[in-house]
Length: 266
Image (cartoon, rainbow, N blue to C red):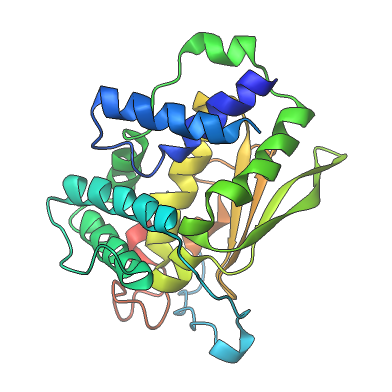
């Protein structure tokens, strides 16, 4: 079980920055993280109206304090997306919030000229390939799901902000395998539904569920920028996922007036 946790954690850490690392560098980074781990169809019906961005007084106050290592992870992600997009932001690489803004700019560039499926595929291809035997040797277990939920807050706060583990009902069983993100830094910072769904939610669900054999459902709340990650729960199919009819934010820089539904989801 401990081996399973380590493998999953190391693989997950590469989800954002594995795109442009050589095999040797990737192996070294994977080893480093393992050391730490020891531990879309259109809706039928009325026209969808633009989503009003959550008023600041209705958003949970969250302060981001990036450590040196946080900035390095942000930069790895930024470089990876920049290589995929063929463009890089000019923002500072060593100043927490400014560095994060640079990553968001590169994320927007990655979306340009690509359909939703092309965006998802670009991110998924950057994940490490997991051998078929892994899922047979380490099949799903409640214990594994709960351990993933315990580990996640320690390793991904740099990307999404503060989060904590909760109890959830998974297939009729109460287990502490849910992670609540108080105010997703990526969603709030981008103000873009498409970036959330195509570059984060769907690729991450696919990797954990299909490659690692650990079902994962991510439920972003577009009303307050929070999100729930439920390990052990099978994600809905792309066609059945309600996020595919989500309206774009009225202040979204990628939004198209009159579209209603986020056009980046198509």
